Image 1: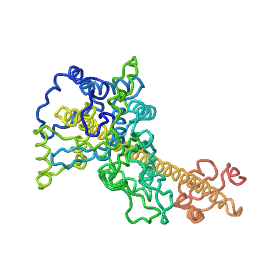
Image 2: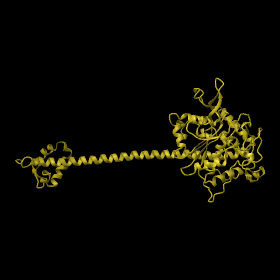
Image 3: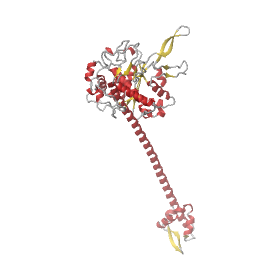
Image 4: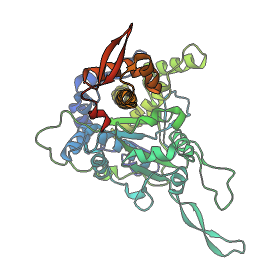
Length: 493
């Protein structure tokens, strides 16, 4: 990690990350963050804004540095922060952890980030900015790898390579083994990952992501010797940053497709910057450019960050006990929120050159987590809106097809009825003209002659009379019909 003095025994660096002295950093911090009161339950998250507030960025020189670097590259400061945290996570000593309960049993500091934005908002630009902002520590130059993410097996394989070993007869041989401990996974467009995750063999990817975030063993213990690939807990560091579009991220929140708990292991960052300045600030340089920030030696002992504020720690313990005893339950979204906040706070302390996590670190981490929750909830709401709109469009298409079908049926029915009517008129006129020896045909006889067109008989007879095809004449109580002057129009047709 880039903030530590390269000594066997960890000590705070002479300068915080970014090159400022402790006195300079203190002077630049806003007064309202100098002392943070104990937090009440439920007050840990910031408001519903989708971007971190200005007071976050001005709280510390290192945060101001990140914001200026992002804006100098036309990128969102929030997105760059998420990418930097994920990258820093990949640089860690695998044993580094944060202890929120003062029990000596710390949690890993792994951070996975999602940058959310429509095409063209600069998701990839934010990742590239983070690459230049937090360069690879010197001791990791030959071992660190940045890889794309495609499969669960590929995540493990990224840590593997060819290593020297001794064969059964004492001869030197090359074997496949874990040769590195630090890997960053980057994916420009998360839709491709979701296609893998929701596919037939994709469940291992989501499960691997969840296990890696928790720092658990990765791999299949029952694999054959040739295919045995495992990463043991405490033997690897990992970072993950994925770009997502709002229109494609929806399946990530479906536990049936991805598995419960997956999205809540990600920090959500907006790719937008509503307050982007008209004039770009100059590039401030990489964060770890000073000699004291060159990173620890590979043999440096792991660092445990400890939450020192007693009031905050008491609140965390009380909440944990309430859940453990069944007196309260946490929503799925909040299951990992406290631990995640502790990880962010530990990274902030590290940037400030400290091992202890303070109330100020906790407060700033709360702003990050609150904004992340707002971005996540906006993605969920967008997905629901999109699904509702698509359902409405499908319903409209069904209705449209139904209307078109009904119109076609009606039109076809009308045509058939018109043909039947015309045929009925022709049948009646031809029946009267059939026998020249019979001067007129009775009404009853015409009706019998209409046959299958009887439904149209009355209208057809009236039409034939009106057009002069037939001429009626009185015959007792009824009429008889003889050929009219215009009958040739029908007979010659």
